[in-house]
Structure formats: C-alpha cells, structure tokens
Image (cartoon, rainbow, N blue to C red; front, top):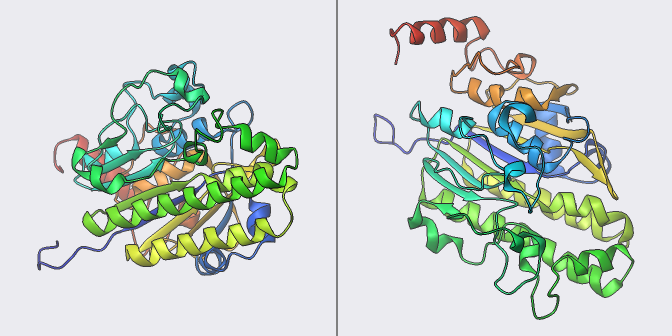
Length: 354
C-alpha cells in the first residue's frame, strides 16, 4: 500500500527464458515479445565465453553483477555443490534491494539453492533437488541441504511445481529421468511426444506458481525463470518442425499473461545464452519496455550490465560492481542519471541519507 492506502504497483517484472537465442526470437512468431521489442529495448544479450557460457555462471552473474570468479558459481555439477553455490560473502540483487526496503519475489531462478531467504519470497530453481522420490537421476547423488522455498507459509502454493522438465518424469516409466530426452534426440517419436508433454507441463507449472504468488503477495520486483526454452533449443532440431513454433508461441502467451496479471510498470525479458543442438551460442536476447526504458530497437548488452541496470531502477548504484548500468537503454526522465546516483551514494556513505 502507498501513503494514500492504494495498492502499490509492481515496478518491474523480470522474466528469464533460459537458452533462448536472438536468432530464434527473430525467426519465430512471438507477438508479445515482438511488441516489447518494438516499444522499448531490443538487444542481443552477449553471454560469457566458454567455459562460463552456461546456465549456472550466467544466471548467477545476473543476480549479483559479478563475473564467475567473483560469485563462485562456475558450473552446475551435482557431484560438487561448490561449483553451483555463491560464495558466502556475495550479495544478490534481491538482498541489496531488500536492504533498501524493496520487496522481491523470486521463482525458479537458477542457482538460488542452497536457499537464501528473500523478502517477500523465493522458490529455488535448477539445480535444486526437486526430483520425485525414488527417481534415479544425477541430482539424487547430492544430499538435500535444506529448504527449497521460503517462507514456509508459501508451501500450499507450491503444489506440483518441480522446477524443470526432468523432475516431472514418472519414475515408474523412466527410472533414469534423462532417458526420454536421449531417446527423443535419437528420433524416437514416442519419446519426443512424451518430452513435449513434459515441457508444456513444466512451463505451465512455473507460470501457475508465479500467478498464485503474485496474487497473494505484494512485491516491487517479481522475477521468474522458465527453463523449457533451453531444452527446446537443444533437441528442437530432432523434432518434427511443427512442434517448435507451436511451443514458442505458447511460451510467448505465458509471458504475456504473466505480465498482464502482474500489472507491472516495466518488464525485462532475457536469456542467459542461445542454443541449438548440443551447442550453446553466445547471443541471447534482452528485451525491455516501460517508462524506465528508452526506445532502442538495436543494440547489445553484456551479462554484467544487467544487475546494475536493475538496481538503477531503485536508485541503487553499487560502485563495487565491475560494470555500470546500461544507460543507453534507460529513460533519463524516469530515473536519475549516473551523476545523481553517485552523489546519492556518496551522501549515503557520509551518513546524510539512509
């Protein structure tokens, strides 16, 4: 609520589409994403070079503004959680905003496990061990290290959410959860149909949980990541051509519906890298629209620019981060410029501002 007792409007909806390449965005019909790009920012997300062009390191950098060497997430390795967990001293964007009184909701963001509480809520994403009991999958080798969501009161909303497609595999059919994926890559039509059913279910479960939490909790920033676009990129080449455009249109519809339900002033939609077949590609997608953003139909943004750009919307400027906000994509009429931020931070450091 604001001072007049009115419901405060969400300032930013952040949507992650794992593995969506800029080329795929351009090639397929995704009308909601296209509308964002025409109204605001349409840029290539320039991912890291190998070996850090991967889900864990990139999304960790989006959350922290630090390179992999700085935040400590160097991969997603079930045999060694040290490769998929932040260094203890590292602060995330959510934490920095919480310290200024900004409420954040985080759903299915990769490498949020082991859990760190977020005000208002967090639901851990890949590679958190959401798997069905009795399933033989690689993540079972890891001892469960704690809660998968916070606070406990959001438990009733979790329902059948399981983060990623492999956690929806029925163990009685596939004790090895990655078997249908491998069979689909080999051209097995039954396995391909089964994989598509898993992707649709996973997509809609993440959307359903996001809707439920937005309806019941007031947040200033809502962040949700959908993993299914990465899987589609990896095995889409082996599918009958009809599947890929239909699924990407469904993803587009889901993102548009989440935005409509959020009532957010601004939206960012981005990926961590692109992918096709077995390979990751360096050019992902970054789209943004709303009063905080300028009209920029062409451009590029580096991974390490994303966190400071998000912080900038709340007048938070952290000089410890290696990159500055992407000022070229920001509307100077909506928020202060770089100099204003630097002045505010200096005054805060001197104790004149809280």
